[in-house]
Image (cartoon, rainbow, N blue to C red; front, top):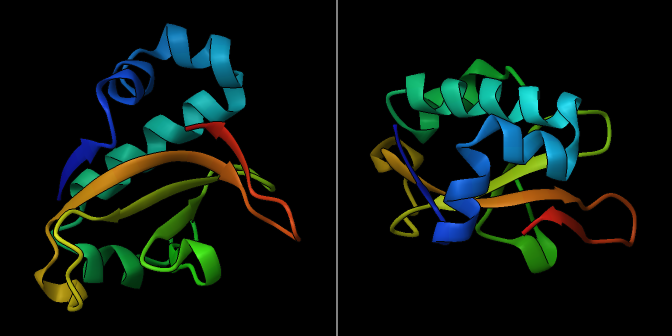
Length: 112
């Protein structure tokens, strides 16, 4: 799949390991790179969801229309289909939104 980022600042941060380590720590930085490679390797969103590696899942509530994939116990990489496609089989481009801890009642963007 092709990967885009929500904005240039996010793209610069997520593609520079040094900056990412400073902002989020080594554990999250390594996990981000691992998951970005995993997303790129999938042919489409359906394939990514079927792999179950990193527990990719659609979100609901105020995060409806986005998906998450596990980075650490509390933090998730949040992304959405580029063209807001209903059919995951047709989605071959995603937009990375950032890193979030959305568990419980909080919605804490670590990397917006």
